[in-house]
Length: 326
Length: 160
Ligand code: SF4
Ligand code: SF4
Ligand code: SF4
Image (tube, rainbow over all chains, first blue to last red; front, side, top):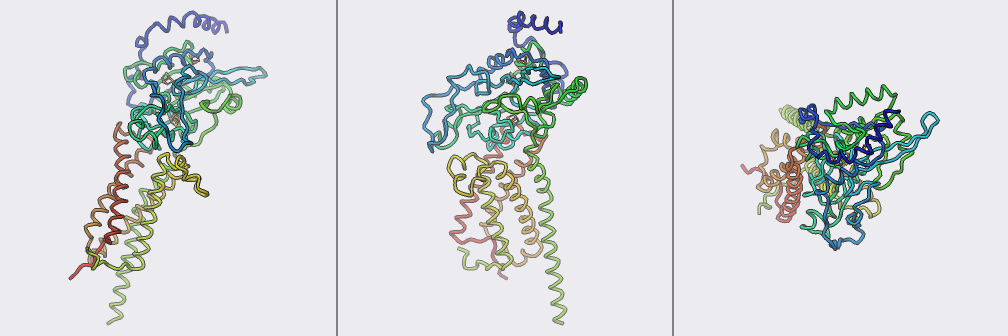
């Protein structure tokens, strides 16, 4: 406990200092750099988070150049029921996901051993292993990268929001008035660009840590090869008799939360709604596609067998009639 | 045109043709449904059509259609090789349709492949595949309509 208090004090004083350390001076661990071929995952130990929001601020700061600068007034869209999504005048919103806020701290107050305890949980895109947002994006604007990142390419995205509809957590957020659709048929197709955490892909490429991980005074998050992260998450869960979220959800994600209380309880206790994702169990959204893909391999064989069968019957009948004619 | 020696389809072939046309219509509709347009343009508001805005459902049907189409294509190709080609030859419009259908199928296979876990395409390739899949399909629709108007079938009976 004393240790924790002193750490907290250190954070209060030291946060500013950490900010000045500079982005590139905390390099990616060697294990991570060496493993760029495989999927990287993050471990989020929610016991450690103190809800200081340093990560949220850091995310806004480093990703500012990627934020939308929409042209106004927005082109009129048809039919009139198409909604404008405009966050450009609310860039400071930090308590939910927006196109200008890709990470927020969600709170859940639960009773542990008869005592009330508030957990603060960093929430953002889970970076699914088989992301429906990327699989079902009709343009390939949302895509999965080798290192386990799911990224939406702001230059291609038309803002149709399908990724948000199919994401089990409805993570991506739209800003109207920017992007490719403005150059095509802004009145009739598209509605802006979808934004979400890109796990600082550009920083990772430079061998740097994602900003939210780097700046966190409590080392809540950790990034590493997925199998190692999973191992560590299980080790912690075993030690504290805790729970894991993200390993199996939606068929597996690259964001692994560890908690001393069941996620069911956290989910019940947290405020959910637009821009505030749940923590419910999630089935693999793409399982149907994976199963049908297997059937696709067999389908031509079935067709060929049917054709052969028919041909065989046909020739046999043919021979039969020949014989009967004799 | 070649309509004078257009070949009358047998009962079985007629069924095959209708299955094929029906499958393509379903594939076209559910394919378009992969773009977020059915809700915006009131299609999903038509009574009984709400399902059209469910991306997972239209995706599922599109995959089922692909399975059926693969079986159908294999059946027809093998049937043609085994017995059809002795009596019939393919028309020029059939070759055009085969090429376009080939384009649709190949790009579609890539798309299915991309959706599998652990498969990652390099940037730009998915975009290319998606646009090509849509492009082949659009050209197919227009050429099929054109061939319908000029009454050019797939096969003509071989003249001996
Ligand atoms: S994750 Fe770290 S930086 Fe973010 S709120 Fe928690 S303690 Fe603060
Ligand atoms: S959490 Fe949602 S947005 Fe993020 S990768 Fe998964 S499906 Fe896509
Ligand atoms: S990984 Fe980067 S983009 Fe994602 S929440 Fe952290 S700072 Fe933001």
